[in-house]
Amino acid sequence: MFTGGEDVEATALRARGWSISAIARHLGRDRGTVSDYLAGKRVPGERRRAEPDPFDRYATYLRLRLRDDPHVWASALYDEVTALGYPLSYQSFTRGLRSQQLRPHCEACAGVKGRATIEIEHPPGEEIQWDWDELPEAPWGDDAHLLVGSLPCSGKFRAVFAECEDQAHLIEAMDGVLRRLGGTARRWRVDRMATVVEPRSGRIQPSFAPVAKHYQVTVVPCPARHGNRKGSVEKSIHYATQRFWRTMTATTMAGGQDQLDRFCERIGDRRPRSLARLEAILGADGAARFLAERGRSRPTVGDLATLEPLAPLPASIYPATITQAGIVDPSALVAFEGNAYSVPPGLIGATVTVRHRLGAMGIEIVSGAGVLLASHHREIPGAGYVLRAPEHRAALQAQILAAFSTEPSCRRKANRPPSAAARAEAARLAGLDDGDVVVDLAVYQAVVEAMAARGEVGA
Image 1 (cartoon, rainbow, N blue to C red):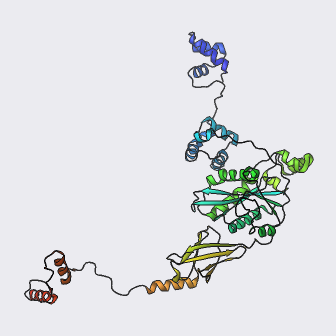
Image 2 (cartoon, helix red, strand yellow):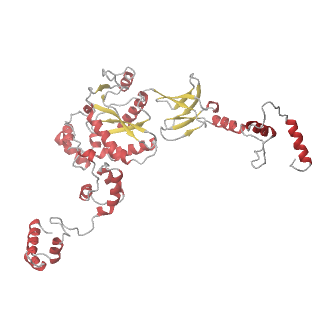
């Protein structure tokens, strides 16, 4: 490998007329090496690999992925190529991305600069931060609503997809997040979402106060226009969006939830954290013993999460009621939470209300007057199930079969010339009558019968 000084000297000697052999003897280098550097085939300071770079095999795939999504994280791409057999480290992978300049330039992002931030210390188990993540163009609908709950001390987070962001769905998603975390912190921090606090005053909504009492927590809203006060959940949302949502392959909400749960456990909880954070909880000696037991030099999110003393959860979810209006389709089905439930066939086209009380196993379908029309077992939201009660199936089948006609089908190729009445009307429209003449159709009939007797027309 030529140094920069050797390259300069070889170039100068060549310009003075020296032969390549003379330059090689002068520098103590191989003649082929000198020839390659002078011809520009090699770059000074860069050692030529003795074997092909394994990164080159994946360059085409990465170029296509980055063309489709220029902002996908390198760590997400590294997971993908590792599954395809890439053998080197993450550092070698990112070096290959930079050296081959595979990521396209984005002018819109080039001038974006972050604002000043500072890390706020949170004792273990003190606080959980909540926020919605609105995700556009979901594979199963227009938008996806993801509720994220994050523990600021450890950085552990869990998230649950919801049909919408009303209060009942919020409570259901919160309970799902808490049970995935294994407990609740003593304080819930939220921004000024209208389903929890009154946006102007910041006071807790009367309808949400029983929820806080059910889980035995206090609710702390962020100050107005200070959303960065809950930076832990904001960072968790950013991480979940870029590392999970951009590369998610699920096509249903239920499938997306399964993939998200696995992602949080297998990838999210294994993120490294600073040793100082662990020492702040256990002290230097305690942190050293903690890591020695696990055979690691740095703690992970999951390690710190085991040190968070979360309070136990109630045995059941707060019994809020989810309601949704829907129109009965021609198959006597009503859509609810990504599934379809049957009603009696006489209601096709009617508007009904589906309601589900959180903690119960079933749903109820009622009319506009509040009359119970059907009850079903509630399936997993977003799974795409069709639940049809046997009595509804039998009634709909009977109605369809009763509508079948036993009359023979129409003869599609028979000769049907205009009738006498049609010809008379055509004559009137064409102005061939005086308007005062009364047409007697019996006369036309007699003429036609006489012509048929003579064989001039068919009978």
